Image: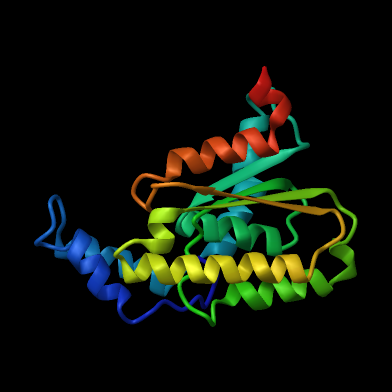
Length: 201
């Protein structure tokens, strides 16, 4: 998650219900660990790790290109992909944000995108953002997922209203998929859309 990213108060009930002691395979320790992570997010450090430690380590041992690198994430991983984009990453050029975990209207990602779009240094560089949602998230019984879908659509609207030269925005909605089932389709859609030549091979 981006630094200082807020989350809705009712999220604690959602996590407790789905991952707490009463849930299959859940525990209070799991719930406590989850909230320890999201209350002290370190997206900035994780992005730095990927770009300046992990990639050089892999490149020193394997034949990998420094160009056309893609980053895909789902849920909070999708929010991280948006964070990487709006950080002006010069390493990643293709970003897949599957059902990104934008859960509140005052998410930091909105101001981050506005600042990204207003910075002329970001204009003209070829980038591709592919965002996806499932209809089960938009229309389903989970309040948390419905609110996430609303905020994801608000982000898409913001990006459409304030386009960045060089940034291509594509989207997809998957019928009958929810937050538990949509990840695989989201990744496939990202790969096919952002890496069409490799997908066709």
